[in-house]
Image (cartoon, rainbow, N blue to C red; front, side, top):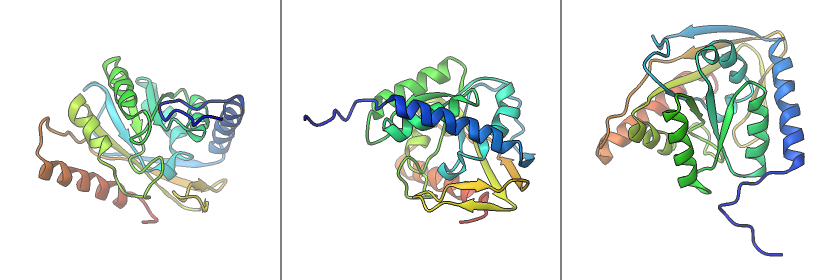
Length: 220
């Protein structure tokens, strides 16, 4: 059997079924959780498409509140990996009306960037987990800053703190809020990256974004 092409998007019926099931479980689970929203963004969406940024281990908790708040304004697509896990995540996010662009820095990176650019040009927000798809956990990779730089779209951080939750033994420590617990969600101030920034300014901005997201978590 030949080696699989690194540029291939992995998909299967199993990933479709399991991902869709996971998405609806997430929706039903969210009905048992109380959400408290603190919006510091000062954004009504009129400034154009935004790049939503959240830690990978918040993907169970944040899509439901996005759907109820920011999702009323415009559509959004999520960057997921080209792997089978990425396929499952894409189908899970579809349960919340979120589209998907498949790819990562390690596989189909250029195609993913083109897909994200087209989504922004079409007026959609995009969502990126900057420590995904493989980690290290709570470390922002430079890709999200590059997307903000070449697109001109502003970054909007999303974070959550949990009154009570389970943390799975996955690489990202996936957080699942316990039923009837409270999730405090914060939308941070929007951030812009100037085009053509030098390497030092780029790294300064990357570190600033990482610190903002770390400050908004309760388990760093």
